[in-house]
Structures are given as structure tokens and as C-alpha cells.
Image (tube, rainbow, N blue to C red; front, side):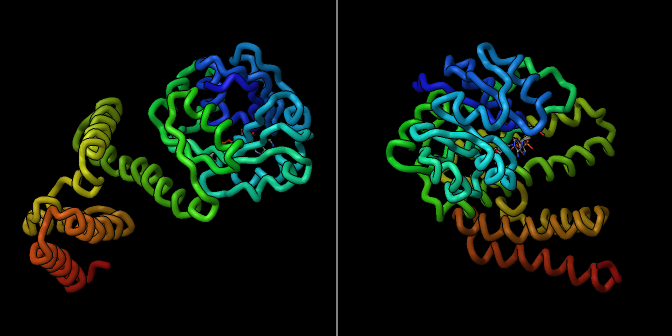
Length: 306
Ligand SMILES: NC(=O)c1ccc[n+]([C@@H]2O[C@H](COP(=O)([O-])OP(=O)(O)OC[C@H]3O[C@@H](n4cnc5c(N)ncnc54)[C@H](OP(=O)(O)O)[C@@H]3O)[C@@H](O)[C@H]2O)c1
């Protein structure tokens, strides 16, 4: 486990979660900087041994400086650091590579990327930053690590310290790696809203609906962990090759907004491909499912629906 000192620059969702997780794992988080001084102060107060500092000071405050700022602010925050040779400056973006840290490279610092494959929601402003609710947010998470051999070793030790699993990633692989991860995390939350809305419409109160949706997601995650590949964990009429069931769903989807209905159809089409690829259905069954969807579309168009 890493015993190197860490400075956090960016007291947002990931910065807050990492500061708590590292500190809980006895990795010394000694400094916190942020765009707004009050955010740095609030987080530093919650982390034992941490001091609020300016972004410039953060560069000399620790052996490892983690830039947990928004993707578009990485260059500016990096240029504002006063990082001497030997210090490791790393950002937590999944889509940007280390070329975003050119200012630190020019100054002689080491540079790297450490992207936790975990979804950390923003804290509601005004919530208590001392609540270590995120201390275990990274237990079991993969961490995509970019950098030289030495940098990878140092960042991997940080990832392992918070219970994560480091894996090396090349710069050119990051955009699509991140697209896949981001689509999954954002779609799961976005699609959950549809499920939640329909539970509410069916009479569930908000707490019951949230509990129902999150349990459903956990069962999906469990199935994926046990399956040979994620597509093999598919459930529902497509996975069962049930064309009639799919047709009934498509009819029900017409009651949704135009955008949500289009999303349903795009998902159904995609899932037919996934089910076939995972060997859940034959090509002939896939054709039957496609025909059921097309029939419904033809009926909708005939009735003048978009
Ligand atoms: N959230 C996730 O699930 C997740 C997962 C993996 C990786 N990441 C990556 O982690 C990074 C941060 O994401 P996030 O979700 O934590 O974003 P966020 O909640 O919006 O936090 C961004 C933080 O950056 C600070 N900041 C912005 N510009 C700055 C500057 N010029 N100098 C200093 N601080 C600055 C902001 O400071 P103030 O609060 O003071 O305004 C804010 O605290 C991004 O690269 C993102 O891709 C996020």
C-alpha cells in the first residue's frame, strides 16, 4: 500500500470520495485545493491532517498531486501548480490522456492518469462533507492507470490502497474505454428514471420506487458478475426469444414520450443483437423478434404516430 503523501486538487465528487477513501486507508492526504477556497476548506476540515491550500501550493505540498478537476479544467489547474521534479501529477479523467498535463511535464514532474471505474454522484451542496459516506466507493473498482512503469507502480499502489484493482491502459485506448463506461453508468441512471416514473405512476411512493429500482439494478449487476459475458445476463422477452412479449412491450411503449419510445426501440434492436451474440437466441429467433418490432412500427405509422 502507498504511504506517499497526497494532495487533492478539486473538491468535487471524485476528489471528495478519493480524499475520504485514501484517508480511511491510512494514506496521508495532506492538502486540499479547489477552485473555490470554501470547498477546499470544507473538505480539508473533514480529512484528518489535511490543510486547505491554493492550487499553486498543492504542487509542493505532497509527493502525489491528484487533479480531480473537471476534464476541461485539467490544463488550467495543471498550469497553476508549482510542481517540482519528482512530484507525480495525475488526473482522474477517463477520456483525457497525460498530454493534458504538459505543463507539469515541462516543469520536470512525473505525470499519469488514474481513472476509477466507479460512478460517484455529486454531493448535494450544503451536505455535511465530513460524512465519510464515500470511503468504500472504490472497494472492488477497476482503476485504469496510464503512465510510465514507475508512475504506474505508484498510482497502482494508491488504487490498491482503497481496495481497487489497477489495470494499465494505453492513451489511445482511453476514449472508447471511457465511452463504454460512461454509457453504462449514465444510461443506468437515466433508464432508472423511466422505471421509477412508471412505478410512481403505478402507485408506489418515492422511497418504495427508489428501493425497487436499486434492487433491480443490483440483481442485474449480480447476474453480470456470474455470467460468462454481460450479454449472457440479458433478461426479458428478447433473451427469451418471445416475439409476442416483445410486441406487447412495443405497444405499451407507445404511451411513452416520443423520445422515450424511440429509446425503447433502439434498446430492443440492440438487445436482439446482443442476445444473438451471446448465444441466447438463434438467428431465426432474432429475425422473428425484428419482425415483431417492424410490424409494430408499421402499425404505428399507419395510425399516424411518429
Ligand atoms: N464522478 C464520477 O463518477 C467520476 C468517475 C471517474 C472519474 N471522474 C473524473 O474525475 C474528474 C472530476 O469529476 P467530478 O465528477 O468529481 O466533477 P465535479 O464534481 O464537477 O468536481 C470538479 C471539481 O473541480 C474543481 N475545479 C474546476 N476547475 C478548477 C480549477 N481550474 N482549479 C481547481 N479546481 C477546479 C471544482 O471546484 P469547486 O468545487 O471549488 O468549484 C470541483 O470541485 C473528471 O476528470 C471526471 O472525468 C469522475
